[in-house]
Amino acid sequence: MNDCLFCKIINEDIPSTKIYEDDKVFVFADIEPTAPIHWLAIPKEHIERLSDVNEANSEVISHIYEVISSLASQHEEFKNGFRVVSNCGEAAGQSVFHIHFHVLAGRDFAWPAG
Ligand code: 5GP
Ligand code: ZN
Image (cartoon, rainbow, N blue to C red; front, top):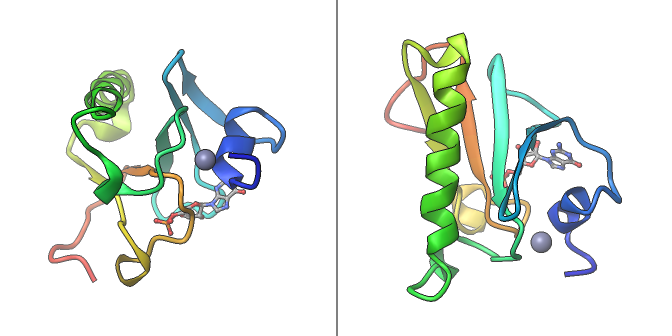
């Protein structure tokens, strides 16, 4: 998708702090972190939002969770717990319409979410 911010980040047309990359997944630091670790894990395939995940494209989503689990085991900040969030739609706070998983660690997190 030419006009998608996160597709541009994947293609490195827009710079980001890359944490991890493979053939299907890209993980980079959020530009406005809300925790000591605040990463965004995204599929390279442009899927707009969580409600667009289906039988045909969900394999990459399970792969994203494998990647997050692996990264968590490699970083001390995840030891006491961490949070993964995907905002779906405007009312939930989604502002970039390329599905992404916020990966948050390094502090305590309140529940319920705001
Ligand atoms: P959402 O609000 O859609 O759940 O999350 C979008 C996230 O993308 C926000 O946390 C925001 O800080 C991050 N973001 C927006 N623009 C950029 C950018 O150009 N670079 C990076 N690294 N993060 C961005
Ligand atoms: Zn995109």
